[in-house]
Length: 136
Image 1 (cartoon, rainbow, N blue to C red):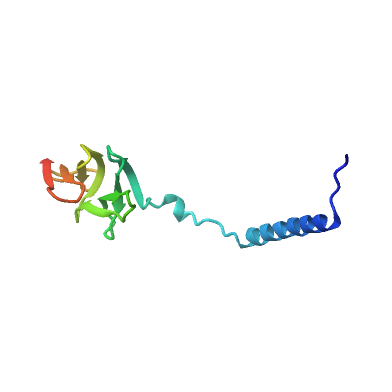
Image 2: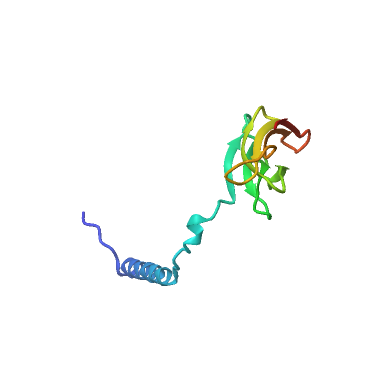
């Protein structure tokens, strides 16, 4: 038995393929090159760490002053980041979960040399409470 395609099906296929080529052509003409600055910009979020239960993320987020801050995002339901560690003159460089409630993180001032008191290790609860400096 030989399968045949009727004239209606053939017309639909021809028009569908033509529409696909037209859409691809329009998209190719509208595509703009990505500005080179995008390849060198700092990411909006970095150093993502999942809490032991998997219910929260600890992330480093750039603030309006250009400094990295520590934020926590609830995942059930997904919420907006709440800042739990931030400084006016120092970047948060890393963070890790101690347990499902508490984080430890390090902050340091920018520069080739960090002067005395320019770096410290801190601990904080996921909601921003009970913040403590552990090591200077």
